[in-house]
Length: 509
Image 1 (tube, rainbow, N blue to C red):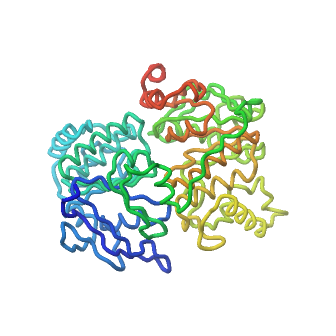
Image 2 (cartoon, helix red, strand yellow):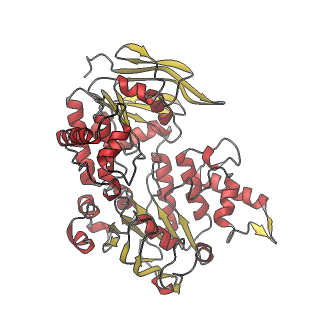
Image 3 (cartoon, rainbow, N blue to C red):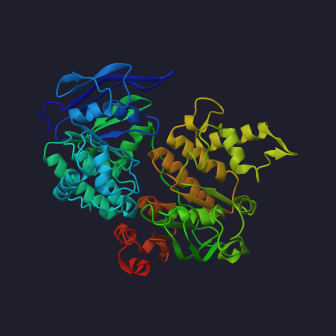
């Protein structure tokens, strides 16, 4: 809508955190009915900017204009009152409450739950986002939970909807449903500010893009006139490396074998694993696809040894039964593990990187000698990971929480790969990281397999699995499908299995 006056303008926004300028004189203009992408690598300043637009942060310099009028946004409540809504990447829902109750507690004006339920049902039908107001949230799929967040936002009648990585947890079919909803929203004159690392998705949905790098606007473009490669180049300032498959991909001896794994979850809202069996051989990458909440966390815990199996022979590494062994013993056998949650599970936020290297490597890396910590060796390990995986940080040994998400992920993956494990199990390896970091991590996984390791990748990103895996299985409600070669699979077929269609769904019923 090129002739429309701006709906929202950010002018010369500066936001400082100490000596760091997260936003450095940023300008952004969004028109009514426009789908506008906000792009940039991790740490580029996207999150800071949208937090300012949503009233979570205040700028040190610059101003925000709404429909041509300067405004101050002291809180999210003030932003919502103006007509700005936001759906965050990480959901804020209470599992034990119903859909309607979750919506009711988030509305700015108190309403009886019965009235909220009626409005919710009406809005969800109108926008093609079906929800049952009386269902408890813990019973819902991740895609249904995202619908709650979007419907809750739409019930407050926003003129600008900010979406942060909205398809990162969706099946291809669910993503198509979301795209249809966004088309309906835009047809009503509402604007969408869209943050995503999926550049083909951006090209399909958006007619304008503002690209940040190191806190500054470096480009504005129509993404429909660009390629994914050219958008990535603008984001990172250089060409993003193309994945080198290398080798033949031929599998050798079995390095990880799982036989009829049945495991009750420690969390009452978790997923029970039912008869899970598979093998991963030397030199191959096995991908496990699935929508979050279908047993991925439980499977990772069973493979890493954080939760022991009922019998030792249920899990075997290089032919040795390890089902009753803990994580340190499995590491001593050449295994390495990268959990999904990089801050809190993979690393302790307040510890320095060297101490986090110790936490993961004290049993195998020689960091402890005669009961004494070898801090020189620990720091040397941090330096080696930093160099090999381009971990960008302000000091040599910062706290884990001081790194951006993408740089912390590169550290966590690199910390394990530099051990040269014979078995690598990694969950969501490129979750929420930019194109450059994703390319580096994926190449490292491929190189690890082609060097003789067995690699198991648990991921919700189908494009990622199709790009790097030799075989793909799907996990649904705690059951695992067969794992045919990638060459015979399509995204649509995998997506249907992720949603519970076909034989896998029947088996899980």
